[in-house]
Image (spheres, rainbow, N blue to C red):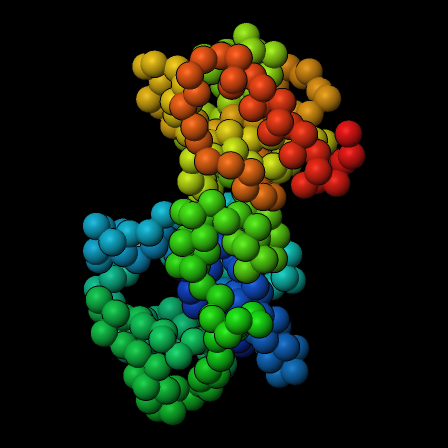
Length: 312
C-alpha cells in the first residue's frame, strides 16, 4: 500500500479512485467491512482503492474536552488497513486549515483534484468540511453536480444488533471487558511500548515483570489483572498482565502496565514490544501485606494458564 502524509505527496494523475474517509480508530470489524466494500467497488470498476484518514481525532481541534482516547496509534492503524489490500492511504493533518475547508473545497481540492475520485463510500452519519458543516446530502449533491458516485454503507452489527463502533469498544475497555472488545475488533486489544525499568517490586516477590514506558501507545483497559500475550519481535509469550498503581505499596501512584511472562526469565529492557489483553481476571486490590499478595499472584498465574489453554 502507498502511504501519503500530505496531499503534496500524491503523484500527479493518481486514480481514478474509489475513496472512503474516516478516522478508522481501532480498525474494528465494522471498518474492515467498509474496506472490503471499498475494494469490491474498486475492483469491479477498475478504480484504485484509497483511504483518507487523519493524524488525530477531529475532536482534538473542534472539541478538545470531548476528545476520546485513541484505540491505536496512527502507525498501527495504517498497518491494519494495509492488511486489507488497499492501494493507498492518505493521512491528513487535522489542523485549522483542513477544518476550515468548505465541503465544496474539500471535494474539489482533495477528492477530485488530488485523488480523481469516481466513487466515495461513507456511512450515514458522515460529516465533513468547515467544522463538520457538510453531511451525506451535501456530498450527494456535490457528487451529482461534479460527477462522482456516493455509496452509503450500512452499520455493521453483531448478533445483539448494537452497531460496532469505536466508542463502544472504548466503553468495554473502560469496564475491563477486553474479551468483548476483542470480538468487535476482530483481534485482541493491544498496547505497544518500550520495556523500561520499574520499581522491581515484582522481582523481589518472585514475579519479575516487564514494565511498559509511560509513552506506550494504544488503549489501556481499566485497572486490574489480565491474561494475555507478550510479543517481542517474532516471539510470543503467555503473560499475566497488571494494570494500575500497585495499591498494596504506599507511595505507588504511577499507573503502569506490566507483564509477568510465564516460564521465562528474559532481559527485555529497551525492547519495543506489544502486549495483548485476552481476558480480565480480577480488579486491582490493596492487600494487607506481602504474603496475601504473593498468594494471589500465584493464583493469577494459574488462572492465566487456564484462560490461555496452557494447562498446568
